[in-house]
Image 1 (tube, rainbow, N blue to C red):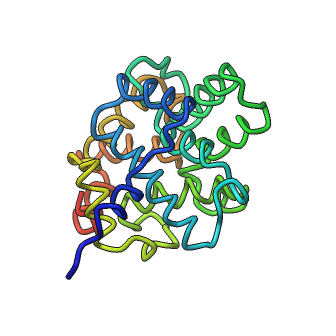
Image 2: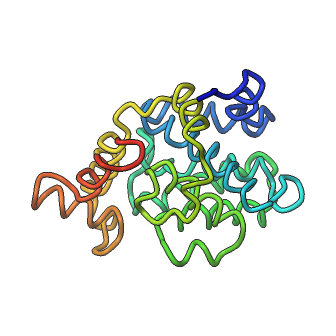
Image 3: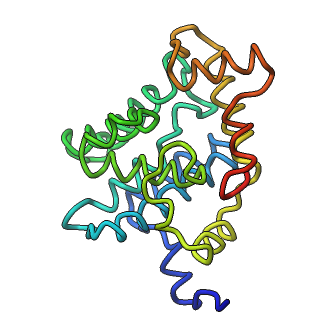
Length: 224
């Protein structure tokens, strides 16, 4: 099977390169594990492929800078320098919105990013809150191999996936991300309400020593 051309691969893994996108990368890279950082960037690259599959055009149907910001910062609530005083999705959304408004992004656009991050674990809700929420949810779930509800898992070919993973390796992402969520959730009962993602992952780890997420994803499309 013929792989993608050099030009196609370069286009596939190219990040926005705008001052805002650069600032986002500089924010998250020092405070996230390499595994979680790579997951966040892959989520954006996969979300962009979903947008293309849906016929959505950057600059017309969505703002690429906002999509990058929301995907790249969707796990900012797990950052090592965070207050860790509420569930990670909300903490990350608050930090991301504040970061954006401090850099001149409008309150309305920052709120779109807030919703996309706060709802990225909320299947059935994120999909009804606008294009940005849909794309972020799809990008994140695609990076889990489609097992948490991605509706467009076939938007990524094997060749595209190989190129993305070569640029941003998985680094045992499922385990690393679960460790980070559980550690943040364990710091305060407010961080882990029952039946939320952090609450259930913490309960499963404490009860069984392993989460269903870790078990299921050993057999997912990406394997980890």
